[in-house]
Structures are given as C-alpha cells and as structure tokens.
Image: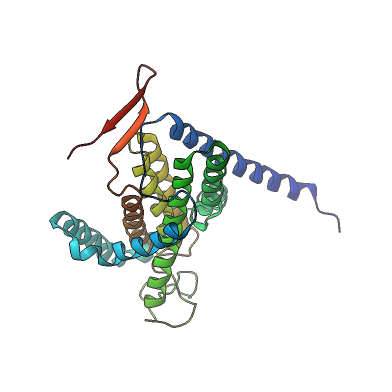
Length: 288
C-alpha cells in the first residue's frame, strides 16, 4: 500500500520540530551547567546505586510528613490553593467549554507536539538522558546528579498522582455525555475514571520546580520551565481529558514534589563554585 506523500511530509516536519526543541533546550541547559553559578550536591548520588534508590524513600517520607512540619507560611499557601480549588470547582465546566469552543489547528499542534510530551515523559526522557550521557562522557558528576534528580521528580510525581487517582476516581470530561465535573467514584474502583489530579501537570510542575531551584541564579530557566509546565496544564483542559481543578491540584502537588526532591539533592550543601565576572573561578561557603 502506497502512503500519500502529503501525509508523510507533515509527520517529518513535526518530528524535526520535536528534535530541534529538545536539542536546543539540552544545549542551553548544559551550557548553564558548565558556566553558571552552581551548587555542589555533595550528598546526592551521581549514579543509580543503592543510595539513589533509598533517596526515593527519603523523598516519599518528606512529602508524606511535610504537613506535620508546616509553619504559618505553608498553611497560608495550602489554604490559598484549597480556596482557589473550591472556587474553580464551581466553574469547572464553564471553563472547559471556553477551551472547547476555541479550538484551532495551531493550538492542536502546540498541544500535541510541544506541551503534551513534557507531561507524558517523552521530552523529559530526552532532556535528562542527554544530561546523563553528557555527564558520563565528560566525567561531570553534577550533570549526572541533575539527570537523576529530574528523573526522581518525574517518577515521584507519577507515583503520587496515581495514588490520588486511585483514591478519588473522578470522571474525565470526555467520558460522559453530557460532561459533569461532579462525578466521583471513590476509592479503588479499578483503572477507569482517573482525572484527579492531572498526572501530566504534576510531572511537568515537579520538573519545573526542581529545575528552577537548581538554576535559581538563571531566571530564564525558571520562566521557561514554568511556562512549559503551565502549557502542559492548559493543554490537558484543551484536549478535554481534565478539568481545571485537576490541573490546579496537579500543579500544586508537582511544585511540592519538585521542592522536596531539590531539598534532598542540596541537603546541607553550602559550598558553591562558579565562573566569576573576571573569568576566574569563584568559591564561596554560605554561613547561616
């Protein structure tokens, strides 16, 4: 069977754009890794050994018992997110309809080939895989640590969101006619009806949160990371597979996971080094 060239050419074009996006991002971030002000993650593994595996348990405990150690600031943030979620819940369907009424080929393309792969793991796999390969080739332990940290953030986001999905079993907007944001099945009802929270959004924000902390002296990394994560969340509503509240809670959960992973990576790490403005090597030790 002969395939029409008109179908082949767009596919080649989209795949080329994917490669350009990921390659450009990897090159930019690796450049920052070499020449930017950095933190030495001296207590974090740079290879997937038993210490790295055990760090998953450490991160899990940190996330699980985190609220027990919250101070006023954290409770205010949590309360704000909860209030925003309740307010958004009332308008879930109205907001979804706005997205569905404003479809376009351009937005379809952006959702499918730019934002969605960040949440599904395709682009993060290429990004952190590139980091790790670079780290091996150049004997750069920090690049390998970032690769493992990003992987940990993604995996922890996937596990956390799946646990909540199994507890709540919320119907997706595309599952029912008419769609209703008020359909919840309750705990452990199989693998269907898993809208809450958005796993793609949780993963994207976990990576963004972690990377923005790793490169906290490079504001463009945070802006780019959170912009991509926000795009992932919006695309989930646009694709009619999640409600806005699924995205909001997924974003909050992902942010918390990314912060937790970074805190494990930089545990008691006060030694920093980098390239000074005069071209020399600057070394500093933070005294608290």
